[in-house]
Length: 98
Image 1 (cartoon, rainbow, N blue to C red):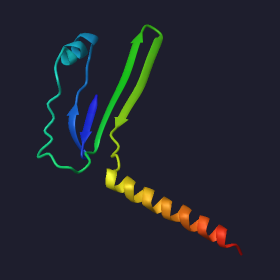
Image 2: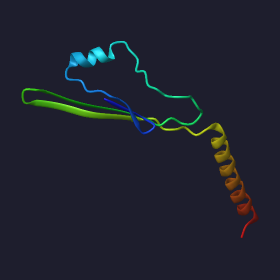
Image 3: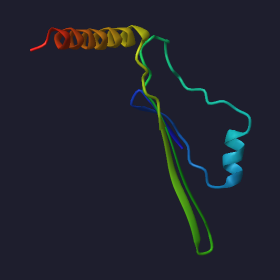
Image 4: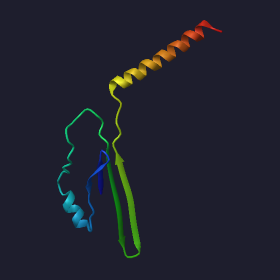
């Protein structure tokens, strides 16, 4: 399991057994040093790889979650205003004719 925070590794944990993984995740939280909180978007990526085998049978998967910044309401309002302006100009030019 690996957690990258702002491009730096905040956690890199390997488990040798199911018991080790259960002990790590047993009703506890991960304390990550986030630093001072700002309104800037946070670049966070969590990845998890699993490989299990018993005898000849093997199973594995990779899982990655990345946080994506969401536009601020002001940005959405500006986009709506721009789209509204374009639609209005097209409507006026279509009404005026060729």
